[in-house]
Image (cartoon, rainbow, N blue to C red; front, side):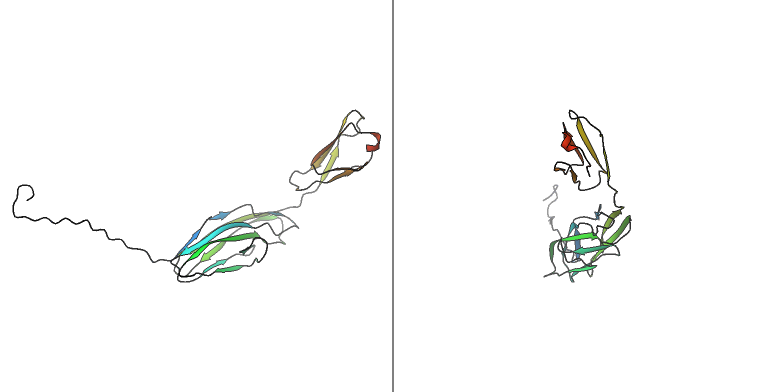
Length: 193
């Protein structure tokens, strides 16, 4: 009896009904990749990566790059405009995808998206932005003339350059952007490049 009423039976049920979606899904580790850059005349860019996976798939995953970008399953080779990731029993395990800005473009910024599709799944995109920079022009200067008790300062630029190689008299070499020679002797007199 409940609440003093006799002859009334109460049946209480805690039934939970769960449903599972069968909609195919494509999962990305990133939705945007930036700074896919190179200097004019030295492309393509170095590849940058993101990961793609899928579940409950009824078809393979197809990735399609646009005009200025290309994609690969390997950092160093195999770049193309399209890739197919084969599903097995509805699954594509996390797979690294490399994207790079193609070579041969003029100095400018390039922003486009890679499309990732599979039948029945919501289309995903990865936004790609990169820049082809104008090639820098090397500059050099020094504080010459200096005395044998001074310091010869060699200044190179611009700082965006990736490599500096100084050479000079008396077998002088340096890979520093800004090199110096303390207490130079007369044998150090000459041209530094």
